[in-house]
Image 1: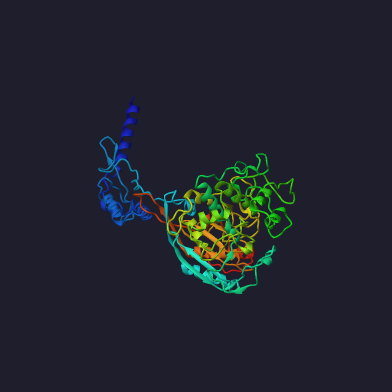
Image 2 (image 1 turned 60 degrees about the vertical axis):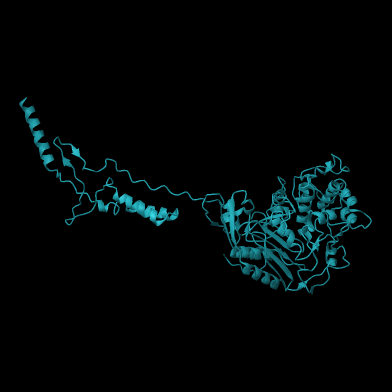
Length: 564
């Protein structure tokens, strides 16, 4: 018992000694240094947030002032005094040996929450790049076109093509004509007595090209065919794009090879019907077309009977399954329009397209294409001028309205032309026109297999990745190159010479024009502040950008390409 009392006494002495060593003097508070040390890094972060989210200086300073004046946000300053001893917070010695925290120091030391950031509207690269859908996606654009770059490129294009005559027309994002000029002088006039071989369809090159010179536009015709069918048949309610021809043409039986061909298939090169050489009489189709004793209707009906059994010299496919560029199938549309309207095809083109647009110098009477109004080469038989054809391009860019505001084509029909027409057909991509190294710009969809800028087809319209946005275009054998960049600009580059002005040079000229122009896009919601973002090269990684070395190697043009 005595030993127990001694042990207890010993423990009391030990604890008393331990408590006596504790300095209970509290560290004084220093309110003025709160933000200087522990909240310093937070203030820097907030300043960064303020810049990123567009906050004004007054708001930012206000938040900082409120933090420094809050008496509840006390902190201890962790510094060293003159003796080098660290001044750390100390505790009081309670009557019962318990530790007490200094007065006014909060028990919770959670970090001060950062201000909630302001929400900023942004959009994906796809939304920026697909300019034809800006309206549907509540977006709006702002465009600054470098017209000087366009003109410089035009002059260079003519110079590099040995002073070839070129008439170029440029429209702005509102489809207003802002530039039209003819440069150069040389061109190849159409022969007045053209033969079947292509070389016999033009006379030797001469000077004298103007914007009013008549010339053949060849495959640029296809967009006019599409617009004519849509305006005269679809917009009028007489028919549809997807009606099988056996329901329209009684001579075609339901079990015939091409009974289920539709207008959409023809316009997108996926009908599966036969392909034949237009520069030869050694095939049944053009033998009929060039025969002055036959009618257009007769030749089309005979064409629809040609298949692997009756004419095995060419390739065919089941309608809608394979996409392959095909001029001859376009003749089917002349028959469909005739059966739907009761009028001759070329009269319908004049009534619904060229006359409303004031295209008085445009028709199917075209010697170089061996085409006449009575027996037209539907896919490639139009002749026009450098001043006339831009009116059609302007109408498409203006969503179906002519330059004076008349409705020529419905908005839905324009959208159909600019929508993929090949559906699930095989090769409805770069292989629709399987020509290697068809490079019309510095952006391509892929480099597997062949290098080809054309990456799809609508209705009489090619799809291409532009430098800073999507492009809807068509090139031709001879006769120029038209381009529509919805919401940004549109253009037509007209020429007629042998050898032709390179489509690749035209495409790369327009690529440089885009690089030097500026295109911005913002949301277009009522009550939401505009946040403008710039369209960047090749869709900011959506498409592959070819280097100048690759461009020159693939095209052989030896161009000097500037970077934007």
